[in-house]
Length: 165
Image (tube, rainbow, N blue to C red):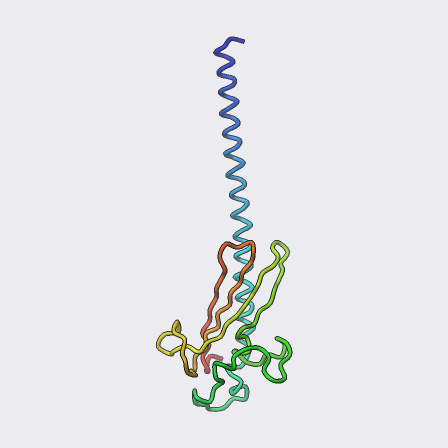
């Protein structure tokens, strides 16, 4: 084998090795993106599941029994949170603001250690992005889902009104 042929053989082997390396890198990036998408989709589904669960509850402790009510009669925002008297678990939650500060951990088959937390705030009628310091007929629930497998948390919000059912 002459020097030129050896040089061409070595060059073609180097090009083949580079192409193989590039192919493997692309394949690995594609797999990583696929897994990341599954993790984010699962996180979104977990947040949506909690919102759907909350939709089944009364707007406020004062509206469990349907009656006409003024905003001032609704629960004070300082009393939001889990475990009103007689509520010992999430199964006992009977109104939206019971989910304020609620937290649970969930593991799924392809990714473990999801952490789900929710917050509840009164918001203004004019702008549901503005938290109200007084009672209103609008409550915004924000669910946050985190996981060590996600670079950013997933947030899902829903605004409930007294007459939304």
